[in-house]
Image (cartoon, one colour):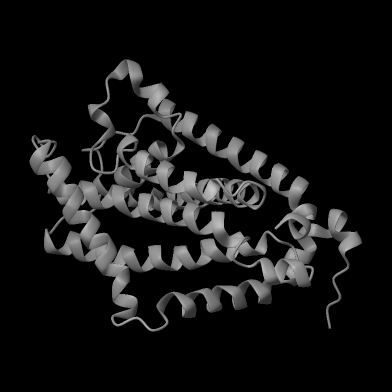
Length: 271
């Protein structure tokens, strides 16, 4: 039997997190069951949601804004390679921000590393993301598009996506405990961010003098790298811009962990 003592948390936090790995798996399984309980189509939603978004963005950015001109590959592939990382990022941010509040009964009754709750939310969303990659593979097969050799770098950008989502996720989760206005702000940020990020268009349309400033939005470097890994040299990757995005991601993750650990001990009192 594992006994977790709150007073040892400061010095053995990450060790306790490893000891609670079964709790992480349990919460992940619970969230998966709840998500699809009493649904008609179940896991088919993994494919329906990105497909509906794909059609919408293709029409808005491609047909109406005419951003599909001059491409030697299907525009729908450009949209899909931007949509999948964005959908993972936005869903993670939304779920993590609510992860502590909706589990207040656990937080107020027993002790465990609270960071487990946003971590389990990210794992659930990552499972959705992995399944959605099957849809991307099917799309590539349909259009007979062969990814470039650069696809070997795809795991690097998936890791960056995970780090960014985790960093912002724990920030929003911790802030939402004290300031419930966060739950109103997060959907606005997600909706606004969709049009500021290169989801339905290529970053190449941004003027050169604005590129570095544009990459301060960390999801830009992630999406550009994800797209570059699959499409290849048709979509250039700015190393300077990517470096800025990586530095921002590291900053978000570091400060997020620092702030979360600082306020974690007060969660049970104010939630």
